[in-house]
Image (cartoon, rainbow, N blue to C red; front, top):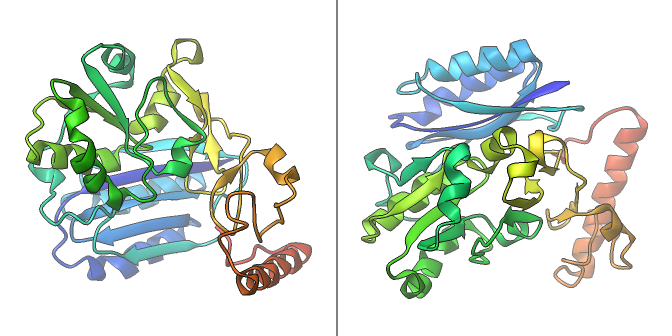
Length: 301
C-alpha cells in the first residue's frame, strides 16, 4: 500500500523559487510522486509513496520557513496514484484571484467533523459547497448549496450575485481538504459576514472520522489523483477519469455511446473538435504502448 498525504499551509515565502529544487530533490530521493505548489502565500499539494519517504518529505516541508506547525491528512492507495513528481511555482496555491484575501489575517470558525452535523442541521445555517461543479456532481452534504462554479475563481462573483439569499443566516462552508475554505471564509469576512464557519480538515477528514451510519455525506468525494474518488473511511471509490475533460465517471458511464477511452465522454463529446479527438487518440495510443511495455505514460497522472 502507498501512503497518500494531502497538505497545505499558508505562510509567507520571500523566495519560493529558491525552495523548489531542494524540495523536488527530497521527493525524488525518497521515491515520492505527486504535485506540490509553491507560492508567496505558502504550499499546497498531494504526494504519495512509501511510509518512510512520506515522513522524510513532510519533515523537509516542516523545516521550511513558517511551516513547523503544518498539518496533513493521510489515506492509502493500492497502487501509486501519480506517475511523476512535480513541484510548481504559482501566483497562488489555490487560485481565487482576490489579491486582498489573506487567510493568515483570519478565517471562519473551524468546526470539527464531530460537530459538523449539528451545525449544518440548524435552521439558521446555509451550507455552501465551495468546490467545482464536477466535484459536487458525485457527492456533497445533505442540503448543501451548489454554486455551480467551474473554477474557484468564479466564487466571488457568485457570492456577489447571491448574497441577498443569505440575509440573517450563518454560513457554513466546506471543500475537499480545507484550503479553499481558508480563502472563501476570509473573503466573506471581508465582505462583512460575521458568522461564517468551515469544516476543519475538509470532507476528507469528515469521511475519515465520522462513521457512515452517522454521516450526512451522500456519494463520493472527488480527489485529484489516480484514485479519482474516495468514500467513507477514505476507501477508494468506483469512479474513473475521462482523460479528455478530467471529469469523474462511474463504470456504467463508460458504456455510453459517446465514451471513447482517453478521447471523449458524454460530458465533453461536443466540446472538442475532430482535431482535438485525433490528438487525444494518439495520446491514448502512446499510453497503451507504454502499458504494454510495463511502463507508465508520463502524460497521465
